Image (tube, rainbow, N blue to C red):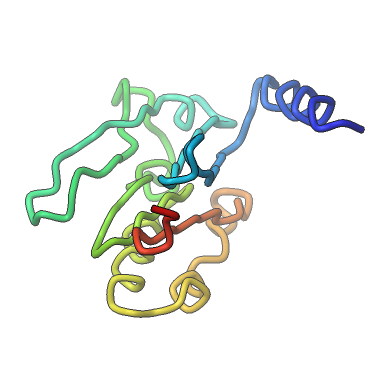
Length: 146
């Protein structure tokens, strides 16, 4: 199977009605900058009722991205599994994830913890969300190839 075949197969799978949650890490074309991407889908009307919103950080850490509700009337269930910070930067660390762990990871990494230590508290969302796995990625400015 060629790389193009794999890409086409993956793209077809991602075109399915429920894409789940996605976290992608890569480098810019010139290899100088990290890129973090997230995507989300949902199994319920409440999960599909979300969008990403860019918000300013008032403490000087840089802007962050949070999930928010389109229509409050459609919001159901436990909001901690659908409303969360998806991207956060802190002290040179950039974190993207599919859940509430983004904030905790960014703080732990900024304080010097390893990624494994920081992630240890976040395994899955529990029974209320069918044990959806926590997916996270983190990169540090000092690890770019500038």
